[in-house]
Image 1 (cartoon, rainbow, N blue to C red):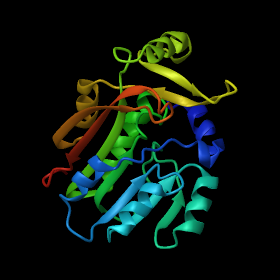
Image 2 (cartoon, one colour):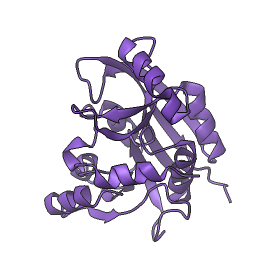
Image 3 (tube, rainbow, N blue to C red):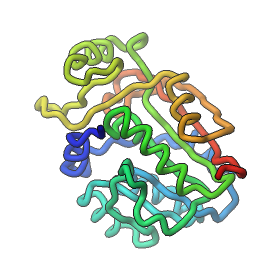
Image 4 (tube, helix red, strand yellow):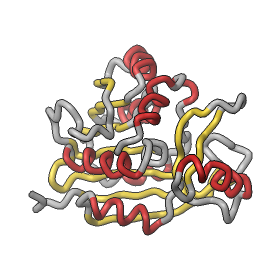
Length: 232
């Protein structure tokens, strides 16, 4: 069963509260492996910060997000990008599947999309709209209890609610739940991608500032993978 509460949380989230990362070094390295221009899909695009960055590098970009307010803001500020409101982890896939893409970008989305079923479905949806030989770029939060005791506390505090290790509820300063967050280990990510059909999986790991707690350290994973030429 998909996590309907996560859907509600993300639809209602204030655009300014949507997490992002401003250091796009790893994304830039992946982008250099693609031809220019490429047709790219930004899944979970929020207000379009990554979409704008891709557009500035002469790529054709489509952005999808479940949050109507974020999409409205993105459409206003970025007329050169095609934006639409969409549930990117929908069980029936990305509708309408009117294009195949050279590359799909999933920036920090997999960690906050919902539950395990949502994560699997998101990766399958991205796979389905990639051209054979097309490339996926993915960044995700990693388990960080070994380097940050605050994360160890969060995992333990919310374990009874989430029912899943290394998962907690991200909250605002007033303690209001914003969304569910899951932190991955390397093999978990590799297995998810393999189960969705991807090949040529490459994973790198970095310790950086937390996306919501810039004064604290956190682990992040950066991945690239390919839809095989001979799939299907």
